[in-house]
Length: 110
Image 1 (cartoon, rainbow, N blue to C red):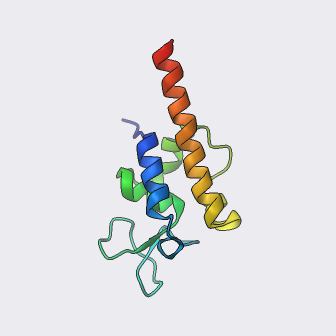
Image 2: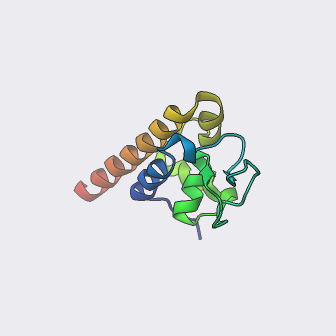
């Protein structure tokens, strides 16, 4: 069964990392001391955009790409996070949520 990620979960992921101190690059999650952590680790305190999606949705990291595909991402979320920075990562999460909501409205109005 394919996992799904909702617009609400994408917005929750954006909210989770909206404070720059809770965001990271080149790792899905980190402890306070900067060491890499599992996204599920209760002591993790910083996440990249992909890790934040995994944290709030419960979708395993290795399935995030497939779960985000229906949302219309044209670039890998991890690439945006690591190369374009904090603001770009949050903007992409919100853009994907907006696209998902628009798609849902179109389906319900059909």
